[in-house]
Structures are given as structure tokens and as C-alpha cells.
Length: 192
Image 1 (tube, rainbow, N blue to C red):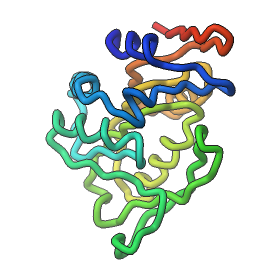
Image 2 (image 1 turned 90 degrees about the vertical axis):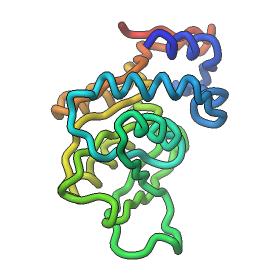
Image 3 (image 1 turned 135 degrees about the horizontal axis):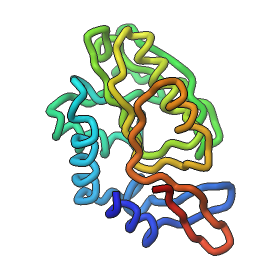
């Protein structure tokens, strides 16, 4: 997606350790006009799939998932990283290691919102090692639901997550795939 790549080039900041900082338009401050174009593109890419629910993980994926859900006219469920008193009843649970935060989260979804009749499109902002997506796949499997696809805004192609998911037979559509980043110059190179 050319619009997204241009925005990453203009506003993305390459940090040490393979971190790409895009918080001024994607995962802290959100550019809703850009999100709207992202949602349209995910709808175009997965128009052939019978999606009846979108699943993401808190927090950065929620905004993108909500905009995308408007185009599919389906609800969004987000996996929570913490148990709250508002979450009653039984839950599906898994552990997910965050690449950015360098910690493991217990992630949960209420059994009320994920079940065998659900045809899920996973939406997330980043794909690096694939831990978050694999955790969501685990929740979907526990629920007996099916995965219709995985939509990623930015994939770090130099890391193994995307390759491993595709090798497992998952349909992964990433809007921008970074081939490599130069920490010295701040340059970002995309795979086409």
C-alpha cells in the first residue's frame, strides 16, 4: 500500500534493536483518514472470505480493527491483556510474548464472544516474530472457530513471524513489508 509506505518513510523512526517507531500516526496518535484507507484495503484483500468477526489484541490493534470492521459490517472482539472485574464468566486464555515490551502477557477472551460458528479475520498493527498472532490463533482454536485470514498493517519481513505463519498455511496479507532498516541512517527499505 503506497500511501502507508510513504507515511512510514516520512514519519517512521528507526530505533536500536530493530524497533520501528510509528506512534505519531499508528499506535499512539492515530491518523483516522489513514486508518480508513487501511480498512478499505483489508476489505478488498479479504472480500472473498466469509468473515463474521474481527479479532485483535489490545491496545494498538483496536482502532485499526474497528475501522476495518465497518467495511465488513461485523463486530470486533479484542483479546484483553489483563483480567478485570467486568469480565465475568468463562474465558479462553493464552500467553503472548511482546516483542516491543519484552514481557509475557496472559491474554483472555470471554467465551461469550468467540465460538465455533465464528469465521475470524485477525487484524493487528505489527507482525514481527508472530507471538501475538500465534496467541490469537491459539484462542481461536480453543473456541473451535475458524481463521479466514490475518491482516497486518506493518510486517517486519526481516523477522520470522510472517514466514512461519505462511508456512503453517495461514493467509497473511501485510500492507507494508519492511525488508530491512538501517539504524545508522534511519532508512527503511520495503519488500515489493
